[in-house]
Image (cartoon, rainbow, N blue to C red; front, side):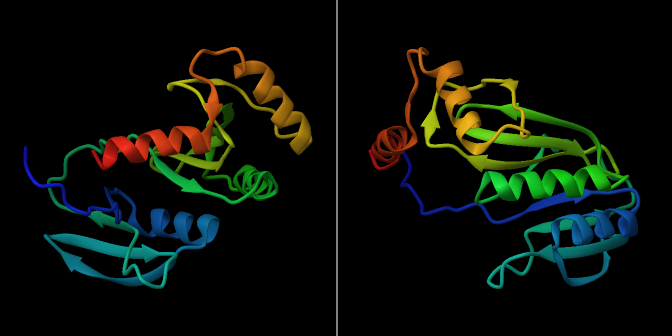
Length: 178
């Protein structure tokens, strides 16, 4: 077995058809800042970030003979259900965010949509729970925070793999460091 390296995820790149439209979407809806841009590999590229130590977290690129996008989704973590409701309202007001739907995964409360070029985007809040994934149930953000918490416990509490996220995290950490 090879030596384990300390690797962390950094950024995602997406080939796009309409660079200006896609850059506007991520800058206006998700408040990314354009850090750089210019010609690359026969096309144009725009670099976007929301973190002062990351030159880019998203790279959008038009390239000559690019393959079709194989991005499964872009996911953005939010700190609270209140923030998730605010982002949901922002997405509902954005005409280029299409196909919105809400999902309770037990380990996350998520809202999904599609960006202007039909890449799936997720905004989510971590829950205090874990259950074996995939797990897809309806989420109703019109409920109060307490109602959502109770509904999550009622939906998943009898599942054999249901546990606190902290317990699951501790188990995963042991596996990672084994």
